Image (cartoon, rainbow, N blue to C red; front, side, top):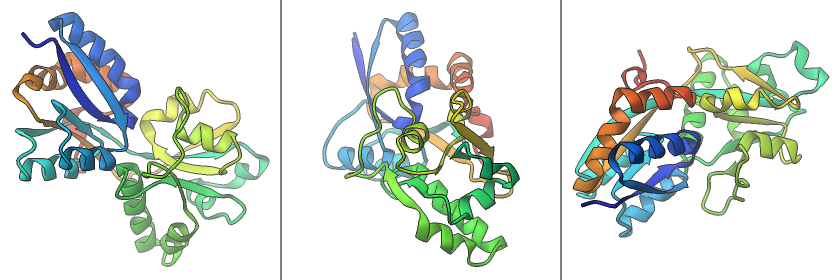
Length: 246
């Protein structure tokens, strides 16, 4: 009988993963052993020979690539996310909207790292959307963005801290683009202001599971079940049926 399942999971899933794992273990008696990290770097580890039972990615591209190379049995989308802007709360923000905050030369803008971390990829996709509507603005943002987290050589965000909170409150940046699933927690910090990004500028993030071994199938099924979906939605994600853009 399976006693444990090894999982590699995107760092943005950390808040949801503990209650998911606990509920799964309570139902099945199977323990879930999880390591978190930027999904792109986790994919590289699997391609180099590491053998998890399940890979939970913040995009669909990494799981599909593993499946194409024979390293995953099945790939299923299981939840979604989007982007928001977090800024240091200062008087200058009162007359600014989300885009003017990003473009303001007074503010240092931090992002995650494209290719290594899907959050960075989604951010760069948003810059492209901005460029189409506001010529040169996307290029300005790409040039000013500091890729401070999510890379192979990036400093690790301290345990229990959110990247936006840590970078801004320690003075490393003034503004951060990250996932909307963190917005509720970030708004609890009086030093921070969180801006929603309008849907026509935002990028929908589709998260996918790569089932790498047979023994991971019960966990994948649980995550896709009504109980699993409810846990994910409580953690700020949108459900599996709303992960793709309209």
